[in-house]
Image (tube, rainbow, N blue to C red):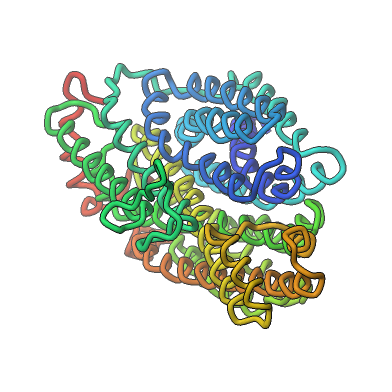
Amino acid sequence: MKKWTVVLILGSAQFVMVLDGTVMNVSISTVVADLDTTVTAMQAAITFYTLTMAAFMLLGAKLGDVWGRRRAFVIGSIVYAIGSLTTALSPNIETLFIGWSIIEGLGAVLVIPAIAALIADNYTGSARITAYATIGAVSGAAVAAGPLIGGFVTTYFSWRYVFVAEVVIMAIVVLFSRRVTDSTPPRKVRIDVLSVLLSALGLVGVVFGMLQSKTWGWVTPLHSPEVNGVAIAPLGISLTAWFMLAGAVLLYFFVRRQRELVAKGLPPLVHVEMFGIRQLRSGLSVLGAQYAITAGLFFMVPVYLQMTLGLDALQTGIKIFPLSIALILFSIVGTRLSARWSPRRIVRWGQAILVLSAIVLLGSLDVDLKSWIFATGMFCAGAGLGLLASQLGNVNMSAVSSSESSEAGGLQGVFQNLGSSLGTALIGSVLIGALATSFASGVAASELPSDVRATVSQLTEGGVAIVPASSVEGIAENAGLSPADAQTLTTIYSESQISSLRTSFFALIVIAAFSMLFARGIPNEVAGGKPGSKPGGTRSGEPEAKPESQRAVPRRRRGRSSRPGGS
Protein backbone atom coordinates (compact mmCIF):
# COMPACT_ATOMS: atom_id res chain seq x y z
CA MET A 1 0.00 0.00 0.00
CA LYS A 2 2.85 2.39 0.86
CA LYS A 3 4.13 2.00 -2.68
CA TRP A 4 0.93 3.49 -4.09
CA THR A 5 0.45 6.25 -1.51
CA VAL A 6 2.02 8.74 -3.92
CA VAL A 7 -0.45 7.83 -6.68
CA LEU A 8 -3.29 8.20 -4.16
CA ILE A 9 -2.16 11.72 -3.21
CA LEU A 10 -1.48 12.88 -6.76
CA GLY A 11 -4.58 11.13 -8.07
CA SER A 12 -6.77 12.94 -5.52
CA ALA A 13 -5.54 16.29 -6.84
CA GLN A 14 -6.03 15.13 -10.44
CA PHE A 15 -9.57 13.98 -9.62
CA VAL A 16 -10.53 17.41 -8.27
CA MET A 17 -9.03 19.26 -11.27
CA VAL A 18 -11.00 17.21 -13.79
CA LEU A 19 -14.17 16.94 -11.69
CA ASP A 20 -14.85 20.68 -11.73
CA GLY A 21 -15.92 20.98 -15.36
CA THR A 22 -18.40 18.10 -15.41
CA VAL A 23 -19.87 19.03 -12.03
CA MET A 24 -20.67 22.51 -13.26
CA ASN A 25 -22.13 21.27 -16.56
CA VAL A 26 -24.97 19.30 -14.94
CA SER A 27 -25.64 22.22 -12.59
CA ILE A 28 -25.99 24.80 -15.37
CA SER A 29 -29.71 25.53 -14.98
CA THR A 30 -29.47 25.74 -11.18
CA VAL A 31 -26.46 28.06 -11.25
CA VAL A 32 -28.12 30.22 -13.94
CA ALA A 33 -31.16 30.66 -11.70
CA ASP A 34 -29.15 31.05 -8.48
CA LEU A 35 -26.84 33.74 -9.85
CA ASP A 36 -29.44 35.33 -12.14
CA THR A 37 -27.30 34.81 -15.23
CA THR A 38 -27.53 33.10 -18.64
CA VAL A 39 -26.44 29.87 -20.32
CA THR A 40 -24.16 31.93 -22.57
CA ALA A 41 -22.39 33.41 -19.53
CA MET A 42 -22.00 29.92 -18.07
CA GLN A 43 -20.57 28.68 -21.38
CA ALA A 44 -17.98 31.47 -21.15
CA ALA A 45 -17.13 30.55 -17.53
CA ILE A 46 -16.74 26.85 -18.42
CA THR A 47 -14.61 27.70 -21.45
CA PHE A 48 -12.35 30.12 -19.59
CA TYR A 49 -11.78 27.66 -16.72
CA THR A 50 -9.97 25.32 -19.10
CA LEU A 51 -8.62 28.16 -21.26
CA THR A 52 -6.85 29.73 -18.26
CA MET A 53 -5.15 26.40 -17.68
CA ALA A 54 -4.21 25.99 -21.34
CA ALA A 55 -2.87 29.55 -21.62
CA PHE A 56 -0.58 29.35 -18.56
CA MET A 57 0.20 25.63 -18.32
CA LEU A 58 3.65 26.03 -19.90
CA LEU A 59 4.48 28.76 -17.36
CA GLY A 60 3.29 26.46 -14.59
CA ALA A 61 5.56 23.67 -15.81
CA LYS A 62 8.53 26.03 -15.94
CA LEU A 63 7.80 27.34 -12.43
CA GLY A 64 7.84 23.71 -11.29
CA ASP A 65 11.42 23.49 -12.54
CA VAL A 66 12.35 26.75 -10.79
CA TRP A 67 10.65 26.16 -7.43
CA GLY A 68 10.83 22.38 -7.33
CA ARG A 69 8.01 20.16 -8.46
CA ARG A 70 6.62 19.28 -5.03
CA ARG A 71 6.69 22.91 -3.90
CA ALA A 72 4.87 23.97 -7.08
CA PHE A 73 2.34 21.19 -6.45
CA VAL A 74 1.70 22.45 -2.91
CA ILE A 75 1.47 26.13 -3.90
CA GLY A 76 -0.88 25.27 -6.76
CA SER A 77 -3.08 23.18 -4.46
CA ILE A 78 -3.39 26.09 -2.01
CA VAL A 79 -4.25 28.57 -4.79
CA TYR A 80 -6.79 26.11 -6.17
CA ALA A 81 -8.41 25.75 -2.74
CA ILE A 82 -8.69 29.56 -2.45
CA GLY A 83 -10.40 29.64 -5.84
CA SER A 84 -12.79 26.86 -4.82
CA LEU A 85 -13.75 28.71 -1.64
CA THR A 86 -14.33 31.93 -3.62
CA THR A 87 -16.54 30.01 -6.05
CA ALA A 88 -18.52 28.40 -3.24
CA LEU A 89 -19.28 31.82 -1.75
CA SER A 90 -19.87 33.67 -5.04
CA PRO A 91 -22.97 35.93 -5.01
CA ASN A 92 -22.92 36.57 -8.77
CA ILE A 93 -21.49 35.31 -12.07
CA GLU A 94 -18.60 37.80 -11.95
CA THR A 95 -17.31 36.44 -8.63
CA LEU A 96 -17.79 32.87 -9.84
CA PHE A 97 -15.82 33.70 -12.97
CA ILE A 98 -12.93 35.11 -10.92
CA GLY A 99 -12.91 32.28 -8.38
CA TRP A 100 -13.51 29.37 -10.74
CA SER A 101 -12.34 30.36 -14.21
CA ILE A 102 -9.31 32.40 -13.10
CA ILE A 103 -8.02 31.54 -9.59
CA GLU A 104 -8.73 27.80 -9.78
CA GLY A 105 -7.30 27.71 -13.30
CA LEU A 106 -4.08 29.40 -12.15
CA GLY A 107 -3.75 26.91 -9.29
CA ALA A 108 -4.22 24.02 -11.69
CA VAL A 109 -1.39 25.19 -13.99
CA LEU A 110 1.05 24.47 -11.16
CA VAL A 111 -0.54 21.19 -10.08
CA ILE A 112 -1.12 19.34 -13.36
CA PRO A 113 2.46 19.45 -14.79
CA ALA A 114 3.82 18.62 -11.33
CA ILE A 115 1.64 15.50 -11.15
CA ALA A 116 3.10 14.12 -14.38
CA ALA A 117 6.68 14.96 -13.35
CA LEU A 118 6.33 13.60 -9.81
CA ILE A 119 5.02 10.28 -11.14
CA ALA A 120 8.27 10.02 -13.14
CA ASP A 121 10.26 10.87 -9.99
CA ASN A 122 8.55 8.27 -7.82
CA TYR A 123 8.15 5.28 -10.13
CA THR A 124 10.18 3.40 -12.71
CA GLY A 125 9.62 0.60 -15.23
CA SER A 126 6.29 -1.23 -15.14
CA ALA A 127 5.28 0.59 -11.94
CA ARG A 128 5.51 3.88 -13.83
CA ILE A 129 3.28 2.51 -16.60
CA THR A 130 0.73 1.46 -13.98
CA ALA A 131 0.97 4.82 -12.22
CA TYR A 132 0.33 6.81 -15.41
CA ALA A 133 -2.51 4.47 -16.36
CA THR A 134 -3.98 4.98 -12.88
CA ILE A 135 -3.83 8.77 -13.23
CA GLY A 136 -5.52 8.43 -16.62
CA ALA A 137 -8.20 6.21 -15.08
CA VAL A 138 -8.66 8.74 -12.25
CA SER A 139 -9.23 11.48 -14.84
CA GLY A 140 -11.76 9.26 -16.55
CA ALA A 141 -13.45 8.48 -13.25
CA ALA A 142 -13.68 12.21 -12.47
CA VAL A 143 -15.31 12.89 -15.84
CA ALA A 144 -17.68 10.00 -15.20
CA ALA A 145 -18.47 10.74 -11.55
CA GLY A 146 -18.87 14.49 -12.03
CA PRO A 147 -22.45 14.39 -13.35
CA LEU A 148 -23.59 12.03 -10.60
CA ILE A 149 -21.84 13.86 -7.77
CA GLY A 150 -22.86 17.27 -9.10
CA GLY A 151 -26.41 16.11 -9.80
CA PHE A 152 -26.94 14.61 -6.35
CA VAL A 153 -25.37 17.48 -4.38
CA THR A 154 -27.04 20.18 -6.48
CA THR A 155 -30.49 18.57 -6.28
CA TYR A 156 -30.52 17.75 -2.57
CA PHE A 157 -28.16 20.36 -1.15
CA SER A 158 -26.45 23.06 -3.25
CA TRP A 159 -23.88 23.16 -6.03
CA ARG A 160 -21.77 25.28 -3.67
CA TYR A 161 -21.05 22.28 -1.43
CA VAL A 162 -19.09 20.62 -4.24
CA PHE A 163 -16.57 23.46 -4.10
CA VAL A 164 -16.47 23.37 -0.31
CA ALA A 165 -15.60 19.66 -0.56
CA GLU A 166 -12.81 20.52 -3.00
CA VAL A 167 -11.29 22.86 -0.42
CA VAL A 168 -11.25 20.00 2.11
CA ILE A 169 -9.71 17.52 -0.37
CA MET A 170 -6.97 19.93 -1.42
CA ALA A 171 -6.18 20.66 2.24
CA ILE A 172 -5.72 16.91 2.83
CA VAL A 173 -3.54 16.67 -0.30
CA VAL A 174 -1.28 19.46 0.99
CA LEU A 175 -1.12 17.83 4.43
CA PHE A 176 0.17 14.53 2.99
CA SER A 177 2.29 16.01 0.19
CA ARG A 178 5.56 15.35 2.09
CA ARG A 179 5.15 11.67 1.31
CA VAL A 180 5.78 12.49 -2.35
CA THR A 181 9.45 12.28 -3.32
CA ASP A 182 10.87 15.13 -5.38
CA SER A 183 14.22 13.84 -6.60
CA THR A 184 14.74 16.57 -9.20
CA PRO A 185 16.41 19.63 -7.65
CA PRO A 186 15.14 23.14 -8.49
CA ARG A 187 16.91 24.81 -11.39
CA LYS A 188 17.77 28.45 -11.90
CA VAL A 189 15.88 29.12 -15.10
CA ARG A 190 15.14 32.50 -16.62
CA ILE A 191 11.46 32.67 -17.64
CA ASP A 192 10.90 34.64 -20.82
CA VAL A 193 7.95 36.99 -20.18
CA LEU A 194 7.42 37.68 -23.89
CA SER A 195 6.96 33.95 -24.51
CA VAL A 196 4.35 33.76 -21.75
CA LEU A 197 2.42 36.70 -23.21
CA LEU A 198 2.58 35.41 -26.79
CA SER A 199 1.35 31.93 -25.88
CA ALA A 200 -1.38 33.13 -23.51
CA LEU A 201 -2.75 35.86 -25.78
CA GLY A 202 -2.53 33.62 -28.84
CA LEU A 203 -4.56 30.84 -27.24
CA VAL A 204 -7.09 33.28 -25.79
CA GLY A 205 -7.52 34.94 -29.20
CA VAL A 206 -8.27 31.67 -30.99
CA VAL A 207 -10.65 30.28 -28.36
CA PHE A 208 -12.41 33.58 -27.56
CA GLY A 209 -13.04 34.18 -31.25
CA MET A 210 -14.55 30.72 -31.56
CA LEU A 211 -16.60 31.26 -28.40
CA GLN A 212 -18.13 34.46 -29.83
CA SER A 213 -18.87 32.99 -33.27
CA LYS A 214 -22.46 32.23 -32.21
CA THR A 215 -23.05 35.98 -31.76
CA TRP A 216 -20.66 37.65 -34.19
CA GLY A 217 -20.74 35.07 -36.99
CA TRP A 218 -17.72 33.19 -38.35
CA VAL A 219 -16.84 35.41 -41.34
CA THR A 220 -19.95 37.36 -42.33
CA PRO A 221 -20.90 39.70 -39.45
CA LEU A 222 -24.16 38.81 -37.70
CA HIS A 223 -24.44 40.96 -34.60
CA SER A 224 -21.20 42.87 -34.12
CA PRO A 225 -20.48 44.89 -30.98
CA GLU A 226 -21.07 48.60 -31.39
CA VAL A 227 -19.14 51.69 -30.35
CA ASN A 228 -21.14 54.95 -30.49
CA GLY A 229 -23.70 53.19 -32.66
CA VAL A 230 -21.11 51.95 -35.18
CA ALA A 231 -20.82 48.18 -35.63
CA ILE A 232 -17.24 46.90 -35.29
CA ALA A 233 -16.56 44.63 -38.26
CA PRO A 234 -13.25 45.65 -39.90
CA LEU A 235 -13.41 45.44 -43.70
CA GLY A 236 -16.82 43.82 -43.42
CA ILE A 237 -15.41 40.70 -41.71
CA SER A 238 -16.67 39.34 -38.40
CA LEU A 239 -14.56 39.95 -35.29
CA THR A 240 -14.54 36.16 -34.82
CA ALA A 241 -12.30 35.73 -37.86
CA TRP A 242 -10.05 38.62 -36.78
CA PHE A 243 -9.63 37.27 -33.24
CA MET A 244 -8.78 33.79 -34.50
CA LEU A 245 -6.37 35.18 -37.09
CA ALA A 246 -4.66 37.38 -34.50
CA GLY A 247 -4.39 34.42 -32.14
CA ALA A 248 -2.83 32.25 -34.86
CA VAL A 249 -0.31 34.99 -35.72
CA LEU A 250 0.68 35.39 -32.05
CA LEU A 251 1.17 31.61 -31.75
CA TYR A 252 3.37 31.69 -34.87
CA PHE A 253 5.56 34.36 -33.28
CA PHE A 254 5.58 32.35 -30.05
CA VAL A 255 7.11 29.39 -31.91
CA ARG A 256 9.66 31.69 -33.58
CA ARG A 257 10.53 33.19 -30.20
CA GLN A 258 11.23 29.74 -28.73
CA ARG A 259 13.60 28.90 -31.57
CA GLU A 260 15.38 32.23 -31.21
CA LEU A 261 15.92 31.66 -27.49
CA VAL A 262 17.38 28.20 -28.10
CA ALA A 263 19.66 29.59 -30.83
CA LYS A 264 20.99 32.15 -28.32
CA GLY A 265 21.58 29.50 -25.68
CA LEU A 266 18.72 30.82 -23.51
CA PRO A 267 15.98 28.65 -21.99
CA PRO A 268 12.68 28.73 -23.92
CA LEU A 269 9.27 28.44 -22.31
CA VAL A 270 8.95 25.14 -24.17
CA HIS A 271 11.28 23.31 -26.53
CA VAL A 272 9.21 23.31 -29.71
CA GLU A 273 11.63 20.71 -31.06
CA MET A 274 9.83 18.25 -28.81
CA PHE A 275 7.08 18.20 -31.43
CA GLY A 276 9.63 16.50 -33.67
CA ILE A 277 9.14 13.41 -31.48
CA ARG A 278 6.46 11.59 -33.44
CA GLN A 279 5.10 9.65 -30.48
CA LEU A 280 4.65 12.79 -28.38
CA ARG A 281 3.11 14.74 -31.26
CA SER A 282 0.55 12.01 -31.93
CA GLY A 283 -0.23 11.43 -28.27
CA LEU A 284 -0.84 15.11 -27.59
CA SER A 285 -3.02 15.51 -30.70
CA VAL A 286 -5.21 12.54 -29.79
CA LEU A 287 -5.41 13.79 -26.19
CA GLY A 288 -6.58 17.24 -27.33
CA ALA A 289 -9.23 15.71 -29.60
CA GLN A 290 -10.38 13.39 -26.80
CA TYR A 291 -10.94 16.29 -24.41
CA ALA A 292 -12.64 18.38 -27.12
CA ILE A 293 -15.15 15.57 -27.69
CA THR A 294 -15.66 15.06 -23.95
CA ALA A 295 -16.19 18.77 -23.27
CA GLY A 296 -18.53 19.19 -26.23
CA LEU A 297 -20.61 16.19 -25.21
CA PHE A 298 -20.75 17.28 -21.58
CA PHE A 299 -21.93 20.75 -22.57
CA MET A 300 -24.61 20.09 -25.18
CA VAL A 301 -26.33 17.06 -23.60
CA PRO A 302 -26.88 18.62 -20.13
CA VAL A 303 -28.04 21.88 -21.73
CA TYR A 304 -30.67 20.02 -23.75
CA LEU A 305 -31.75 17.79 -20.87
CA GLN A 306 -32.20 20.74 -18.51
CA MET A 307 -33.26 23.54 -20.80
CA THR A 308 -35.57 21.59 -23.12
CA LEU A 309 -36.76 18.66 -21.01
CA GLY A 310 -36.60 20.51 -17.69
CA LEU A 311 -34.66 17.78 -15.88
CA ASP A 312 -32.93 18.65 -12.64
CA ALA A 313 -29.21 18.12 -12.01
CA LEU A 314 -29.62 14.61 -10.55
CA GLN A 315 -31.88 13.45 -13.38
CA THR A 316 -29.31 14.82 -15.82
CA GLY A 317 -26.55 12.89 -14.07
CA ILE A 318 -28.62 9.69 -14.28
CA LYS A 319 -29.14 10.22 -18.02
CA ILE A 320 -25.37 10.45 -18.44
CA PHE A 321 -24.76 7.47 -16.15
CA PRO A 322 -24.23 4.92 -18.99
CA LEU A 323 -21.29 7.03 -20.20
CA SER A 324 -19.96 7.36 -16.66
CA ILE A 325 -19.95 3.65 -15.87
CA ALA A 326 -18.50 2.72 -19.28
CA LEU A 327 -15.70 5.27 -18.94
CA ILE A 328 -14.57 3.82 -15.62
CA LEU A 329 -14.98 0.22 -16.78
CA PHE A 330 -13.08 0.64 -20.04
CA SER A 331 -10.28 2.64 -18.39
CA ILE A 332 -9.62 -0.55 -16.43
CA VAL A 333 -10.11 -2.74 -19.52
CA GLY A 334 -7.66 -0.59 -21.50
CA THR A 335 -5.04 -0.91 -18.78
CA ARG A 336 -5.43 -4.71 -18.75
CA LEU A 337 -5.31 -4.87 -22.56
CA SER A 338 -1.90 -3.14 -22.48
CA ALA A 339 -0.30 -6.48 -21.68
CA ARG A 340 -1.56 -7.94 -24.99
CA TRP A 341 -2.29 -5.04 -27.35
CA SER A 342 -0.10 -2.15 -28.46
CA PRO A 343 -1.11 1.39 -27.41
CA ARG A 344 -1.87 2.26 -31.06
CA ARG A 345 -4.32 -0.63 -31.37
CA ILE A 346 -6.13 0.31 -28.15
CA VAL A 347 -6.25 4.00 -29.11
CA ARG A 348 -7.61 3.24 -32.58
CA TRP A 349 -10.29 1.01 -31.15
CA GLY A 350 -11.21 3.81 -28.75
CA GLN A 351 -11.41 6.34 -31.59
CA ALA A 352 -13.50 4.02 -33.77
CA ILE A 353 -15.92 3.42 -30.90
CA LEU A 354 -16.20 7.18 -30.37
CA VAL A 355 -17.16 7.74 -34.00
CA LEU A 356 -19.70 4.91 -33.77
CA SER A 357 -21.15 6.34 -30.55
CA ALA A 358 -21.63 9.79 -32.09
CA ILE A 359 -23.47 8.22 -35.05
CA VAL A 360 -25.67 6.16 -32.69
CA LEU A 361 -26.43 9.26 -30.60
CA LEU A 362 -27.35 11.22 -33.72
CA GLY A 363 -29.70 8.44 -34.81
CA SER A 364 -31.27 8.18 -31.35
CA LEU A 365 -32.41 11.79 -31.08
CA ASP A 366 -36.06 12.30 -30.27
CA VAL A 367 -37.94 14.83 -28.19
CA ASP A 368 -37.42 13.23 -24.77
CA LEU A 369 -34.26 11.12 -25.32
CA LYS A 370 -35.81 8.15 -23.51
CA SER A 371 -34.89 5.46 -26.03
CA TRP A 372 -32.48 2.64 -25.18
CA ILE A 373 -30.53 3.64 -28.29
CA PHE A 374 -29.53 6.93 -26.64
CA ALA A 375 -28.33 5.05 -23.55
CA THR A 376 -26.36 2.68 -25.82
CA GLY A 377 -24.75 5.63 -27.60
CA MET A 378 -23.73 7.18 -24.27
CA PHE A 379 -22.29 3.85 -23.09
CA CYS A 380 -20.25 3.51 -26.31
CA ALA A 381 -18.97 7.08 -25.92
CA GLY A 382 -17.80 6.24 -22.40
CA ALA A 383 -16.14 3.04 -23.66
CA GLY A 384 -14.17 4.93 -26.31
CA LEU A 385 -13.11 7.68 -23.91
CA GLY A 386 -12.12 5.09 -21.30
CA LEU A 387 -9.83 3.22 -23.72
CA LEU A 388 -8.13 6.50 -24.67
CA ALA A 389 -7.76 7.59 -21.04
CA SER A 390 -5.98 4.34 -20.20
CA GLN A 391 -3.21 4.93 -22.75
CA LEU A 392 -2.47 8.53 -23.57
CA GLY A 393 -0.79 9.63 -20.33
CA ASN A 394 1.86 6.96 -20.57
CA VAL A 395 2.22 7.37 -24.35
CA ASN A 396 3.05 11.06 -23.89
CA MET A 397 5.28 10.81 -20.85
CA SER A 398 7.22 7.77 -22.11
CA ALA A 399 8.13 9.70 -25.27
CA VAL A 400 10.64 11.81 -23.31
CA SER A 401 13.33 11.27 -20.68
CA SER A 402 12.62 11.79 -16.99
CA SER A 403 14.49 15.11 -17.04
CA GLU A 404 11.96 16.41 -19.57
CA SER A 405 8.89 15.04 -17.78
CA SER A 406 7.88 18.42 -16.31
CA GLU A 407 7.94 20.08 -19.73
CA ALA A 408 6.05 17.16 -21.30
CA GLY A 409 3.55 17.30 -18.43
CA GLY A 410 3.00 20.97 -19.19
CA LEU A 411 2.39 20.22 -22.86
CA GLN A 412 -0.02 17.48 -21.88
CA GLY A 413 -1.90 19.93 -19.67
CA VAL A 414 -2.00 22.49 -22.50
CA PHE A 415 -3.50 20.04 -25.00
CA GLN A 416 -5.90 18.60 -22.45
CA ASN A 417 -7.31 21.98 -21.46
CA LEU A 418 -7.07 23.58 -24.88
CA GLY A 419 -9.07 20.63 -26.20
CA SER A 420 -11.67 21.17 -23.47
CA SER A 421 -11.83 24.91 -24.21
CA LEU A 422 -12.19 24.38 -27.94
CA GLY A 423 -14.76 21.62 -27.43
CA THR A 424 -16.98 23.77 -25.21
CA ALA A 425 -16.52 26.87 -27.39
CA LEU A 426 -16.98 25.09 -30.73
CA ILE A 427 -19.81 22.70 -29.86
CA GLY A 428 -21.49 25.36 -27.72
CA SER A 429 -21.32 27.86 -30.58
CA VAL A 430 -22.63 25.29 -33.05
CA LEU A 431 -25.50 24.46 -30.67
CA ILE A 432 -26.50 28.07 -30.02
CA GLY A 433 -25.91 29.19 -33.63
CA ALA A 434 -27.93 26.27 -35.02
CA LEU A 435 -30.73 27.05 -32.56
CA ALA A 436 -30.92 30.65 -33.81
CA THR A 437 -30.89 29.60 -37.47
CA SER A 438 -33.45 26.82 -37.00
CA PHE A 439 -35.75 29.01 -34.91
CA ALA A 440 -35.64 31.86 -37.43
CA SER A 441 -36.39 29.47 -40.29
CA GLY A 442 -39.20 27.83 -38.32
CA VAL A 443 -40.84 31.17 -37.55
CA ALA A 444 -40.49 32.37 -41.15
CA ALA A 445 -42.10 29.15 -42.49
CA SER A 446 -44.87 29.05 -39.87
CA GLU A 447 -48.49 30.13 -40.22
CA LEU A 448 -48.08 32.80 -37.58
CA PRO A 449 -49.52 36.20 -38.58
CA SER A 450 -47.07 38.36 -40.53
CA ASP A 451 -46.93 41.01 -37.80
CA VAL A 452 -46.08 38.30 -35.22
CA ARG A 453 -43.34 36.89 -37.45
CA ALA A 454 -41.90 40.37 -37.89
CA THR A 455 -41.99 41.00 -34.13
CA VAL A 456 -40.29 37.69 -33.32
CA SER A 457 -37.68 38.28 -36.02
CA GLN A 458 -36.91 41.70 -34.59
CA LEU A 459 -36.69 40.44 -30.99
CA THR A 460 -34.32 37.60 -31.94
CA GLU A 461 -32.18 39.60 -34.37
CA GLY A 462 -29.17 39.36 -32.06
CA GLY A 463 -29.53 35.62 -31.57
CA VAL A 464 -31.73 33.24 -29.60
CA ALA A 465 -31.05 32.58 -25.93
CA ILE A 466 -31.22 29.05 -24.56
CA VAL A 467 -34.12 29.02 -22.12
CA PRO A 468 -36.37 26.21 -20.82
CA ALA A 469 -38.82 25.31 -23.58
CA SER A 470 -41.63 25.36 -21.00
CA SER A 471 -41.02 29.07 -20.38
CA VAL A 472 -41.37 30.18 -24.01
CA GLU A 473 -45.16 30.31 -23.95
CA GLY A 474 -45.17 32.66 -20.97
CA ILE A 475 -42.48 34.86 -22.52
CA ALA A 476 -44.46 35.04 -25.76
CA GLU A 477 -47.71 35.97 -23.98
CA ASN A 478 -45.90 38.68 -22.01
CA ALA A 479 -44.68 40.05 -25.34
CA GLY A 480 -48.32 40.43 -26.47
CA LEU A 481 -48.89 37.22 -28.43
CA SER A 482 -52.20 35.37 -28.23
CA PRO A 483 -52.26 32.01 -26.37
CA ALA A 484 -52.56 30.14 -29.70
CA ASP A 485 -49.62 32.00 -31.25
CA ALA A 486 -47.60 31.54 -28.06
CA GLN A 487 -48.22 27.78 -28.19
CA THR A 488 -47.15 27.67 -31.84
CA LEU A 489 -43.98 29.56 -30.99
CA THR A 490 -43.23 27.12 -28.16
CA THR A 491 -43.55 24.19 -30.55
CA ILE A 492 -41.22 25.85 -33.05
CA TYR A 493 -38.68 26.54 -30.30
CA SER A 494 -38.75 22.94 -29.05
CA GLU A 495 -38.27 21.61 -32.57
CA SER A 496 -35.42 24.08 -33.08
CA GLN A 497 -33.68 22.81 -29.95
CA ILE A 498 -33.73 19.20 -31.15
CA SER A 499 -32.54 20.35 -34.58
CA SER A 500 -29.64 22.25 -33.05
CA LEU A 501 -28.72 19.20 -30.96
CA ARG A 502 -28.69 17.09 -34.13
CA THR A 503 -26.33 19.58 -35.80
CA SER A 504 -24.04 19.50 -32.75
CA PHE A 505 -23.85 15.70 -32.78
CA PHE A 506 -22.88 15.80 -36.44
CA ALA A 507 -20.06 18.23 -35.56
CA LEU A 508 -18.98 15.72 -32.91
CA ILE A 509 -18.83 12.97 -35.56
CA VAL A 510 -16.58 15.16 -37.70
CA ILE A 511 -14.17 15.85 -34.80
CA ALA A 512 -14.07 12.18 -33.76
CA ALA A 513 -13.45 10.98 -37.32
CA PHE A 514 -10.78 13.62 -37.97
CA SER A 515 -8.94 12.71 -34.77
CA MET A 516 -8.30 9.20 -36.14
CA LEU A 517 -5.67 10.72 -38.43
CA PHE A 518 -3.55 11.65 -35.41
CA ALA A 519 -2.94 8.11 -34.16
CA ARG A 520 -0.24 7.14 -36.67
CA GLY A 521 2.62 7.95 -34.33
CA ILE A 522 1.24 6.08 -31.31
CA PRO A 523 3.60 3.16 -30.46
CA ASN A 524 2.69 -0.09 -32.18
CA GLU A 525 4.62 -2.26 -29.73
CA VAL A 526 3.17 -4.06 -26.74
CA ALA A 527 4.52 -2.59 -23.48
CA GLY A 528 7.12 -4.93 -22.04
CA GLY A 529 7.16 -7.05 -25.19
CA LYS A 530 10.29 -8.40 -26.80
CA PRO A 531 12.26 -5.81 -28.75
CA GLY A 532 11.28 -5.83 -32.37
CA SER A 533 8.17 -7.90 -31.77
CA LYS A 534 6.00 -5.11 -33.11
CA PRO A 535 7.95 -2.43 -34.87
CA GLY A 536 6.64 1.02 -35.41
CA GLY A 537 6.74 2.78 -32.07
CA THR A 538 8.47 3.34 -28.79
CA ARG A 539 7.87 0.88 -26.02
CA SER A 540 5.62 2.58 -23.51
CA GLY A 541 7.48 1.49 -20.43
CA GLU A 542 10.99 2.47 -21.53
CA PRO A 543 11.28 6.19 -22.21
CA GLU A 544 15.05 6.04 -22.49
CA ALA A 545 14.92 3.51 -25.34
CA LYS A 546 13.31 5.67 -27.99
CA PRO A 547 14.44 4.96 -31.54
CA GLU A 548 17.19 7.38 -32.50
CA SER A 549 15.25 8.40 -35.59
CA GLN A 550 12.52 9.82 -33.39
CA ARG A 551 14.74 11.85 -31.10
CA ALA A 552 18.10 12.60 -32.67
CA VAL A 553 17.23 15.94 -34.27
CA PRO A 554 15.25 17.33 -31.30
CA ARG A 555 17.98 16.28 -28.84
CA ARG A 556 20.77 17.95 -30.82
CA ARG A 557 18.84 21.18 -31.05
CA ARG A 558 17.98 21.18 -27.40
CA GLY A 559 21.57 20.51 -26.44
CA ARG A 560 22.43 24.17 -26.77
CA SER A 561 20.27 25.17 -23.86
CA SER A 562 22.39 23.11 -21.48
CA ARG A 563 25.13 25.73 -21.51
CA PRO A 564 25.15 28.34 -18.70
CA GLY A 565 21.78 30.00 -18.35
CA GLY A 566 20.01 27.13 -20.10
CA SER A 567 17.33 24.90 -18.72
